[in-house]
Length: 105
Image (cartoon, rainbow, N blue to C red; front, side):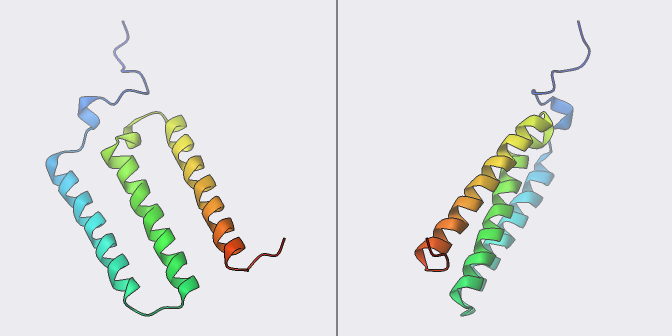
């Protein structure tokens, strides 16, 4: 019997403690507050959209890595999540460009 846990299963010694979860929640709250504040700055629509998409991607990554424990799993799972995020971001950017007349077909 192997003394190592499978790479896809997080072990108890890798789980963050309550303090770390609180720090992560504070970071997520700060990013959310920044998003709300940025909305009220009156930035041009293209700049506002870009900033909010980037901040949303950062929050998504933090939630996936910490709260879903992906940080402690096999790197293959991280790659799968990040490739999905990349494809979704690409699709959203293409649709925004297409529907706002930035791209001509």
